[in-house]
Amino acid sequence: MAAAPPILPAELRDKTGRPFRVRPFNPADRWGLEEMYRAFDPKRGAQGLPPGDGESIRRWLDQVLADGTHVLVEVDGEILGHLMLLPIDPACCELANFLHQAIRNRGIGTALNLLALEIARQQGRGRVWLSVEPVNRMAIRSYEKAGFRRLPGSLWAPEVEMEVWLESPPEAG
Image: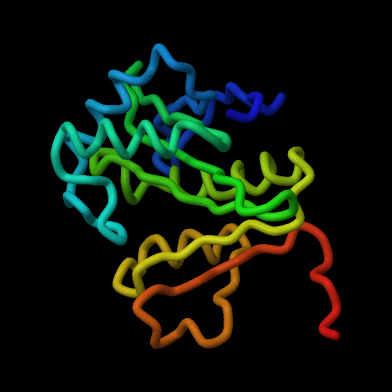
């Protein structure tokens, strides 16, 4: 797992003025993260994730926590969000984030997306990529607010692919 960036932990406020904390994941957080995913709604909401039952959640977390950078959102000491930057190659990483239903529509997702871009920049990544279901319009708007742009050809695909270049993209040859 990548080292925590120097910008974390951070004490932030959502668009209603309520505080939330963003900090690096550490192994002692595992139980709280599993609890968040057990209470997550809708089950299997984004591309079949998170998994719907406890054992599947544990196996999935074993896989995703093994690599990348993981950041948690806490509200009143409770883990209610999980941001992942998973390496694709040395220059690119995949962004995924999950917010518990209790903290959605408060601008926290957009704040996390902007934070993810700063973390990726600090890690020397040139590009951040993601895919999202086209029906998840709130997430797409949040990604667009953070600077993500849809990739051509993904408009009618089962998944919308989006990216941000943190440095100039390579010229087409």
